[in-house]
Image (cartoon, helix red, strand yellow):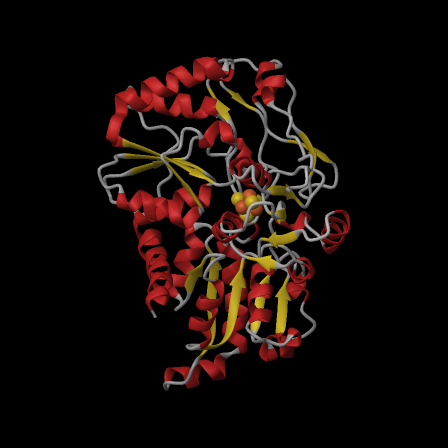
Length: 431
Ligand code: SF4
């Protein structure tokens, strides 16, 4: 019989209070963006706050009337707008979105699955992407020219994606170019390339394009190992950005020695690297980026879960640090976590190290199993949380009126090279 465990409860905005959590992005308690803020005194079209992470020059903006609507009114207006738009509209919901958003989604999935879904729905003129900015960019790159991708709230970025920007990556690339000049000359004669860039899907379109132009590739958390093998078949080293942890977990799994893995800290002089020889000896150079949500999970939480619930199975996302991945029973992408829990027998107890909205949904959808989040302090992805039904109602009604607001559009040249890197990744599947 399944053990009864009280899951952490996320305070609902309908209770009138913004959600306050302890979050890594600052050492202080952080208030997640909430329409309660508008209700508490916003006037006119309001910009509340800049995102807390670097690089996102986007702000939460919404006409006041939408911020003040009740959930019932929002439901009704969204349903009316959807009916008016019919097959011209498709709504996509990432697994980390809260239920109030997922209930409107025509498809739910991880970022790549949703972009592929969008590309297959060619009859849809409008793709409403309830996720974060880099996901909407990827959907725009993979969709048809007539399709318009809309991110309901442009302030929904990804703090990890924002930790790598094109200027910083190009600066490192120039350093590496100088350092590996002799190897490059050999490569021009047919030897392996000195280094191959790999960007995680969670990155800006211009970084995917950088990889496309420089013989590199994109990876997701489900195919990172396969992609790294592809890179080592062509090059002596890999530059992996922006997630240090996914890069390290993958490299160690492939048997790369820890001393051949270097970390480039873009915030410090010369990346906080001891000397040039370190970069020459390295097989993998990791960018110092991380996911604020996944880095909250720890081996101590796993030890506690095992002590309290003997027999518990622990599954975590590979964006967690290596010690946590080692302490878990299993690790894998969001889609992997869903599949492994779905396939487990009734009565199984699962401690899960990933975003809380997904964990809560898994618990609701599998009442025959006990599923709980490893982290006792609730920390949803604060950037995903910026998508609220009020934004959906606003952008949908604007579409019905013939106006496209909050469109995410990648320029042609960037899209062309980003697609090269994405297509290389797709080709590794068939390899
Ligand atoms: S969970 Fe982490 S990696 Fe995913 S969108 Fe949120 S901040 Fe980015």
